Length: 206
Image 1 (tube, helix red, strand yellow):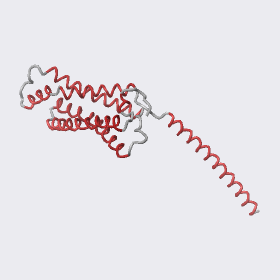
Image 2 (image 1 turned 45 degrees about the horizontal axis):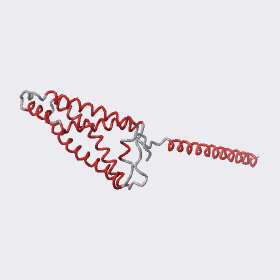
Image 3 (image 1 turned 30 degrees about the vertical axis):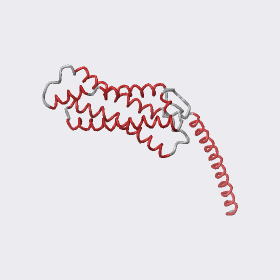
């Protein structure tokens, strides 16, 4: 009786093992199919919305750098306890408005980058170039959030240290933009990749 019970237990155990193995194979096949679907849906270019947001931010940031004298003069007058210079009001508030727009558009860009994704670097991209590119992109996004925020804290709350931080971040952003442009030109002219053209042609294949 004991031997028969053991045999029955062994048979049942083998059947359970076989069933688990079969289910494991099925799960594995399903997992591979899901991976294939994900790979098939992998983003190969930026959407028209992402490109439009990119160039809108470029225009606004360019305006901020070229027309910042008015806000500086108004801030200096505020620090000195004097009324703002006559004729600077319009440009001053244009600078403030443009800064808030940059903040909002940068948040939209981050949302789309997370929810939709972004195209991967060229498959033959050296690892160190990928790291540099990711670092520069990450810092630019961070500054597009930090610069308007520090400026708003300084302007609306009168926090003077925030204005100093704002000035330092402005210089850092200028440097990173130069590095970003140089990297795009390097990709286009030296490596002959389509990285730069992705920002002109929606959904361009990599």
